[in-house]
Length: 220
Image (cartoon, rainbow, N blue to C red; front, top):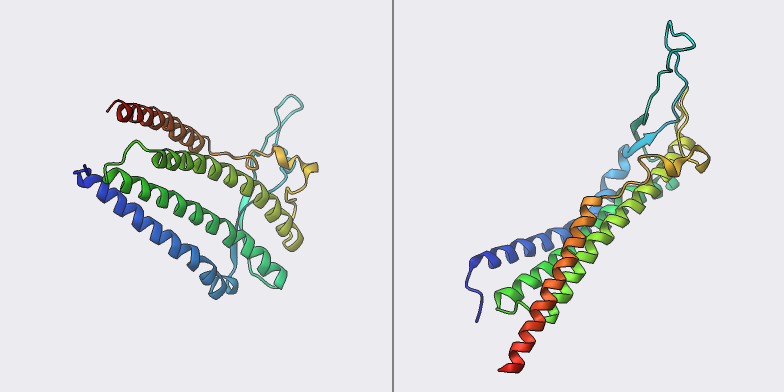
């Protein structure tokens, strides 16, 4: 018997629309970048600097020194050489395309799951695999984002340090500057990982439901 509620149909339609939008953006991002972005200064994101020494006026030897934490700025640079254009493509195109590709997969699997439920096929091995894939995808996306952020922060720092000079400031880029231990370097979205684990936990519900369904079919 088919599922009678229109809710699943509407949700399936939304994920179908999301799938189409992700596919369009996946194709449009590199086209727009090649057509327009390379002619304009590109926002590279945050660039971090080594904290300069501070001196407080009127301070004594017993006074605690002033400190600055996470000194950073958003830097935009124009592409000049082919090397600049290649680097800007990696920073501005690579991760958005990966993101929309992963979102496309999530929407596709959700669309298939809603379609199966709409047909009355709730507890099945196909749905079990779809839920597992979605849970794993959410966790993998969070880890990939952290890895890309770690790479981007170091690559952008090195790129800016070689092409832009800052009076009195030094860009943090090398391991000698404790870059890997910088608070902005290792950023993992724990909330997203928890959501992925919750989705994976739901696979146990699907598995037990599938087992009960199979036992009921055998008794009949």
